[in-house]
Length: 299
Image (cartoon, rainbow, N blue to C red; front, top):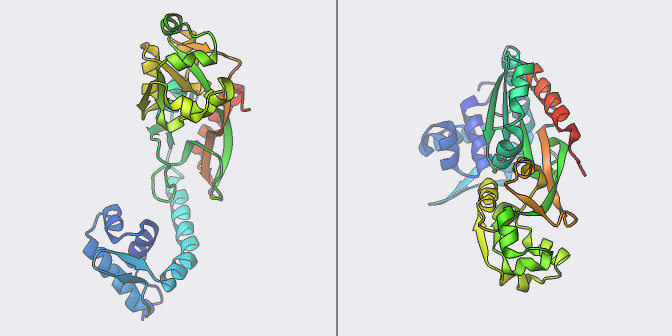
């Protein structure tokens, strides 16, 4: 018997355990579920143990399968990291992912400065709200909006999350919004990704959750869209001050009640995997972004 287990089978096994599905593993590996099943069976035959139990519609890892995955996982990650580092020595690109609102409202006005400072670097910027998987997705570094707790990541806080009330100047004047309790007659634009209205109105207007539920609300699932709705006089939005600075400067929005800003248990963090050395270009980008963010009130 060969000293090494079948390597294609290891790939199929790792993906199946991580995704808890032969079908999803097949989609990731660009093969059929049947091919994944065959590779798993080959590995089981080589090991002499059952790694999954199969039923008509479901496969589940056995205790032996979970134990084997835990033991080979670090080695497989080392292979990926070492291979990426060797491959990346001549790679002058940087792949970064960040939340869409952060990309549009803060980063987009600054990224040209990086390319001016480092013209030989190819910058690839992606935007998504879902958390990326550094072990699977082709990403070097990311900005993530979360609580900063992830033992697998190095995290640097760029900006503490806050919720402040904004609307168009004309909407403020038309509705006569002079104090937080006046919002009971406004339309609340509820960004469901950052839904802090009950907490904000409870803290600054003394309203209960039941009181808040009676106020007219429009639910919006994109932060940038919620801010645009406020700009166009559709209501009042709770937003992170970081994302409204340009619209405030241009007079499109006004900050209602500047003394009433709620600190929330999330923030924008620069993140990357622990124990993974940065390529030169990635380190340049990391240091540049931290320098760009140095003026921010981290809080």
